[in-house]
Image (cartoon, rainbow, N blue to C red; front, side, top):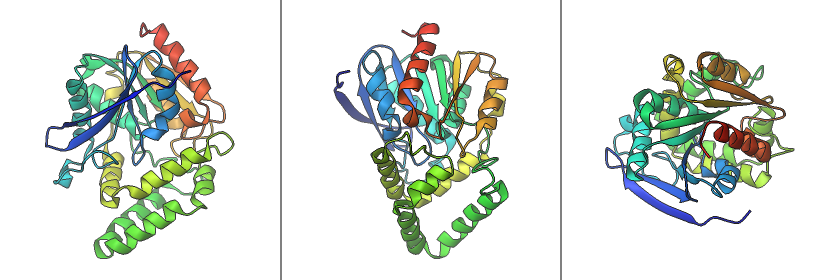
Length: 296
């Protein structure tokens, strides 16, 4: 498999925020949406594989990494990010694409489909959810009420000691013990995922503005895309990791139950980042899905 040259660019979104993107390959377009506070590296294996035969497009959300941040933080919302996706589609002159979402990216794509269904050829949802994902998050380690209280407490504390909590946040994320703890919670499978990929992710999370993270995390908890599920009429592949403790199988079962054109793929040993754990298996299965749905 040879390396495909990367093309980079940016465009001005509806409110003037600059959105950065990367393209590789040519052919039918695939647009990849990562999870909250994640980065393009989460798609590294899919980009390398599918850019051999497709036009693969990754981008950074507003407030993330190489994209700009809005001056008005009210424009950090599900709808704002969805407008950025549509802006990317229009900027690149794409009439229809295959859209893939991981984790929070699935919520975004549900809202995107709700607003712009005519641009969607098919959907791939990996370890995703339609509603507040803290239900069942981390299994028995921490209940949803506890997670909510911790988050609300952090929000309140930030008002009084922003510098201290920012430093604490970054130290916690970059602490070497964070990686095995994340694995224990089902975020990664350390026996399968490259430590380098996890370290890249940790550095990306630490670099994110904590105010942006808190605002988008709240948006994630508040958004409910359940009503969109029954509207989806395009072929949809739902991927679920059997070891995902962050967004466990109940979320993916809920998606599959209501999306009439969907199929569910359960991946043994897959964590919350199934596409990083078992990329060859996921890539081959997604390729089969694309071929079956006339996207070759």
